[in-house]
Length: 389
Ligand code: FAS
Ligand code: PHB
Image 1 (cartoon, rainbow, N blue to C red):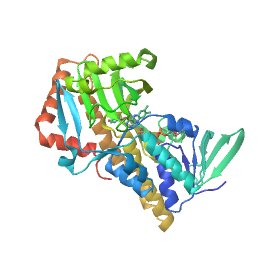
Image 2 (image 1 turned 30 degrees about the horizontal axis):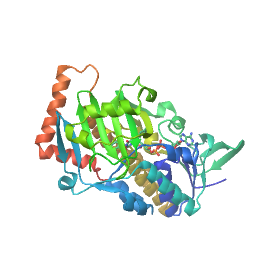
Image 3 (image 1 turned 180 degrees about the horizontal axis):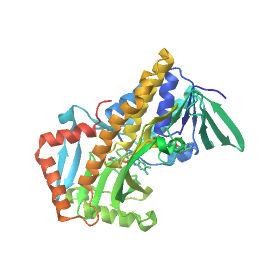
Image 4 (image 1 turned 120 degrees about the vertical axis):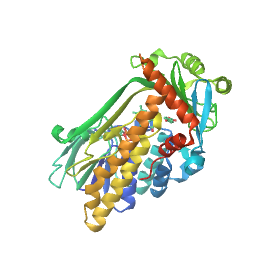
């Protein structure tokens, strides 16, 4: 078959790009290696920046998000037994929306089906060729048959482990990485959140995060060692450890319950440059990964897609490739600022193994400066609500 843009991956990046391009009258096909249910079964991000919310509105997928999403005007940071609120709205005039990535994905899938635009689930062994000829091809297997797509452009939206970045010759790619010596053990539970806003905790036993998906569904995280498995953590052990890391007030409101999901995510910072090779463009986790401490992963995918969709629309509207040529530099400028912020939040809130006395004093000073300075809080707030596109 022939199309204009072949999109690999039906996570938030691929689905949002597909929706925006479809509304711009650009033909696309989305290839996803997993089943629809498998994609929807992954529990990931929970906080949307205002820019992401506005982009989902622009994609015509914002109505349920606006109805069910929780507007948050602040976050809390707990350290040394005290909690300090960062008033996002007062400091930036902006808020964030708590609305799970699973729901974003569901809304985007529904929009694709309503539009009748092609999407192929369980499309296996996707391979990209002819990337530099101006007429790239994508081959894949489905139900034991081989298919080939001729297109103008390929959008690699297939995440960190996808094939798109790996289709770029090694000598054409520069990568930057920092792997953190700990992971996040996350639990999802159908119990009301213990507080109205998110609480990020720096405790001598390790980081914890109290988040939520709705007024009746909570999401909690504990910093854990990289050699730990989910099977090492019964629900009871998780709740006992979370309570140890919470202040008495938070502990009082914590409601335990059976986990409906429990998983461990490793933490890394990763950037691949450039985010383009020939007529292949990378977006989202295919190009970069951030530790979830700053709630940036999903939101960076959104800004990549905003830039790429507008650049492709410009190319098909006016034949100018100027915006496409500017995409890598434009996307990376915002990516690196979010990578910095996510690294800074991770350094400040986690307990690193074998810290030197100097490291511990610097971390305490970072937090005490933050709690004592409105200007420091404004800098955190401006990054947390999302820097401008
Ligand atoms: P995704 O990885 O979401 O989607 C890529 C899609 O491509 C997948 O559906 C995959 O099946 C498909 N694919 C891969 N290879 C393919 C191939 N060869 N052919 C076809 N399809 C292929 N971010 C936050 O902001 N907060 C969080 O708390 C948070 N928690 C996370 C926890 C985990 C375990 C992970 C892995 C990530 C987390 N993130 C979090 C980041 C996450 O939300 C990503 O930023 C977001 O999913 C990025 O979306 P995509 O770029 O679409 O990549
Ligand atoms: C979540 O609710 O999953 C979440 C919220 C904020 C973060 C990371 C994860 O920084």
